[in-house]
Length: 233
Image (tube, rainbow, N blue to C red; front, side, top):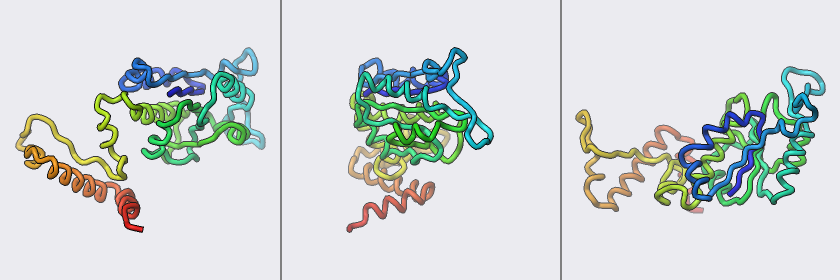
């Protein structure tokens, strides 16, 4: 998989994209991430990539020409499955979306900045618009890092145990159950006996019951959706 990220602030992506699972995926050749500085496509020697809004109003807007040139430059080298724009008014990012995008080959992520991008870029190039939550960030760089991380960790071979991603929260519509490791007793709190029993059928039943209980208590919206999705039709 290749992910090309177009950004005004490439430095914000240096840390998140060069450590942990993302770095492992790059080292093993499972993923390639290219960060493209939008200022390389600036209109003039002053590095202009933004301008005032038509109609007035506070805040600058990223201009059409630099973004168009950057996307066209990338598209001249390969075909892209998606051109994603990170924006507060996009679809809310979730595990199902990550699963879907992990099956793609080439993706562009365009990071929003200032008051956003000229609407015509959204009409001409963007195929999918994504928000990571109902709040506003300074720019879309952190959102792009989150999207990239949640996609790349799903690629075959990235995690040490392939089953690990399948048992994460949200994969089956539920939050993950509680987990324990050694010691078996800590500050008078003991690991549930069932986890020490060696009876894997009982362990799986316990984990499912715990996942349902935790989801019902902490995310009733998810629990209700899970129940509705699993009702016979």
